[in-house]
Amino acid sequence: MAKKGQRHRLIIYTYVLNHYWRATLGLGIVLLGMVAAIAWLPSVLPQYTPPQVPVGMLWLAGAAGVFALLVTVFLLAARKSAYVQPFEKHLRLATPFLRINISYQRIIRATSAEMARLFMLERLKGQMRTYLRPIARQTVIVLELKGWPLPRWALGLFLSPFFFPDRTAKLALLVPDWISFSTELESFRGVWLNSLHRPANSPQSDLLASFTENK
Image 1 (cartoon, rainbow, N blue to C red):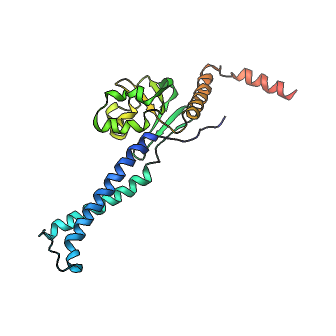
Image 2 (cartoon, one colour):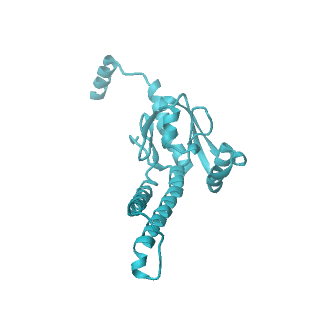
Image 3 (cartoon, rainbow, N blue to C red):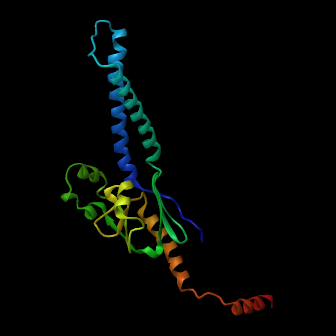
């Protein structure tokens, strides 16, 4: 069996960053547009009288606009870089700022659920409900764990609230093909479980096997 499986992209991570990069792009354009209107537009339109703003404030606004555009480029590059990938002894969860290996020993079970039922769409309000509505009918894989691989508060710094169905040790993983991911995960985990019950060969049995093979 292969030592590692395919990378399955984490849709939630991409989905959230899609909202952020649009916001930072808009902010950068607005700030740079304001600087251009105040600093350079009068040279093109002499009849235009811009508001009086200190030069230092213009430089600060321009720097903030450039920074917002740089953040936008980073978010565009990073939005599809988060994934989960099964290995021989663990499941890897990776984002641009977080990479953890979740041992199969820590996983109790993996189940499937609909996003809307898992997070109770009707109970959400405001921005959270807006985020969930377009993906409410998608199926998510839920890992029930014996404990967190990192403190819950630390994971919350890097992962969306939609990774955490409740306050217990569970992780919700929304991937493009949940059937493929589930099958691959159970296959790797099954091989690992079987290896735990397979008796280790003793030196005597290895020696006997070698004689048998040479006959």
